Amino acid sequence: MNRDKFNFFQSVYNLVWQIPAGRVTSYGAISKCLGTPKSSRMVGWAMNVSHGIPNFPAHRVVNRNGMLTGKNHFETPITMQQLLEKEGIEVVDDGIVDFSKVFWDPFKEIL
DNA sequence: AGCTTGACTTTGA
DNA sequence: GTCAAAGCCAAGC
Image 1: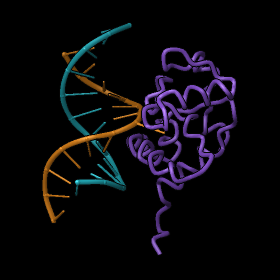
Image 2: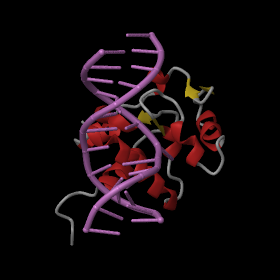
Image 3: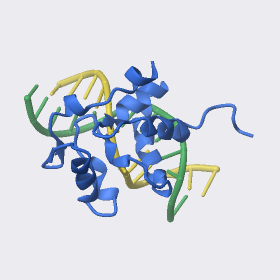
Image 4: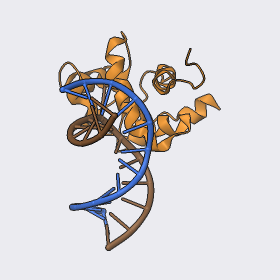
């Protein structure tokens, strides 16, 4: 069993699951929380695989700019925005309004 | 087996 | 402040 090292993806999922509704986080924050700030891209890969997970709040994960970069990977390029707006997050021009306010810091929860 | 791409971030100019 | 390039790990071909 390759349980020697925790699966990166598994860690990402575990973290994303802890994101409360109405809040968002960035790929870098997640990877940094996992101890690999340079593997921010892998977080994106994890999201891609997360498509097999039902009710996965992938829309709560955006880039460090607060821009919905992964919206194109959703069922429709507007699904992500609609989901965010549904949770009370305002999105304009594929960007989250008051990103700093809705930003959810994983360290704050895990610590 | 090896090379390319990818939902990012950081640093340099 | 904006633009360009490098780094990173993993999956796909």
